[in-house]
Length: 467
Ligand code: NAD
Ligand code: UGA
Image (cartoon, rainbow, N blue to C red; front, side, top):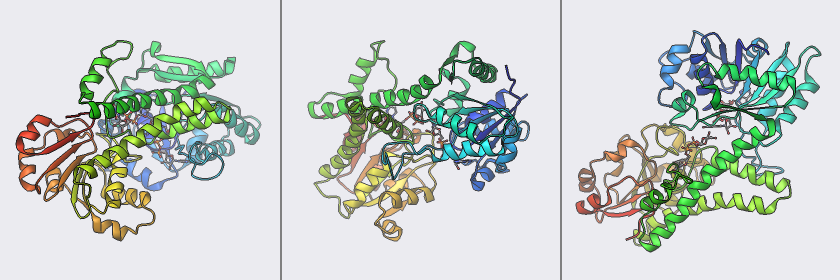
């Protein structure tokens, strides 16, 4: 079995960064080098004052302990590849924007270019690990590229090792994973490579939590896990619409169904819709895979999870407009939260982006506050979602504030889009005093005390709560 002493991770993003930083922390005997094409990102990982490129609770402590010891961040990709015994490919795999499969298929150009880079510069044999989420059988394409372009004395074993961390809890998820999944060809070489990676994880993960399976099962399991998680949210959000129409309470319904041990209580929180870089992308990927395999009913089934999510976001912004007497033109609305979930500064596919766009299209004025999202990111997201509107015009309608209280001041309505803990501690009496009347609160994250807010004088609308 090959022994791993040097690891290279290609891609210093939300997955490559935290995952390989934790490997370095837990395996001081292994040298870990995380590389990226993006110089600014690498500079941020190396910054003296630990202004890391991503916000993730606990990450800074990990980097402080391991960086410079056995953890390195670099743009010297060639050197890191040449030195490594094992290479994680942890690059982005966004949805294709044009060409065959546009809007559904994963764009594998970054995976392919990283693979070609390995083939071109490697001077010794490597274990190459797919960490990125990829369509089923991508490992086969990687093998073909590697074998066709490598030097004669180099051989490559390809493994699939998908990542299941969630943003906001990434460090805890990496320290205590429910499971680590390793897929390999079931050949002696494939199994030996799989065991070599297993020994890396065995430094802190109990061996019975490391599942070793075939390559294609591993690739598909990652798409399947995200699809099933997203499906739970779309299911509970579909029920939230029924609750609003009937007077049932989605919290009570979710609690009641979650008590069934076969269903379980987690991931049943109704919301304004799921966001994040992966759920939608991975389901669309599964839809495309199903269509390519001539399984239209299967494709249609999974597509509904995304359709329901879009419906939920639209339904919520329509509730705001309807409740504010069918017009929000010229009215100022406070949007609390812009990240796709709490404890991250990530805004990819955040439902808040859709809500703000809808409000702007209705000609409302919008205040935005988020404790972690950098202002530049908000402007970038709004420009991308409204490509025909110049940023200077967007800026006339949008004001980014530096506190929740300031955000709510002189507004007609407060919309809670992200479940940041600090929004649970808002002094609603003070907010109410500073708002125009009647003052409305629209809670897309089930975090306010409806009764208390009503007693203060607010009109309150909460996802999944009818009168
Ligand atoms: P990201 O965009 O944050 O990071 C990817 C990085 O790869 C970027 O910094 C980019 O510059 C770099 N890169 C691209 N091509 C490169 C190349 N050829 N050489 C060197 N660097 C290159 O993406 P992410 O969120 O870390 O996601 C990476 C993969 O992990 C995706 O497939 C995603 O689906 C999957 N995933 C993400 C999460 C998550 O929470 N974000 C969780 C599990 C799995
Ligand atoms: C998700 C999965 O949970 C991870 O296992 C997976 O590795 C990752 O995608 C990925 O492949 O990228 P993440 O998107 O970071 O992780 O965060 P989640 O906690 O899953 O939340 C996703 C979205 O669903 C958020 O917008 C969140 O607010 C929403 N959500 C979550 C709900 O609306 N209700 C819930 O009950 C749970």
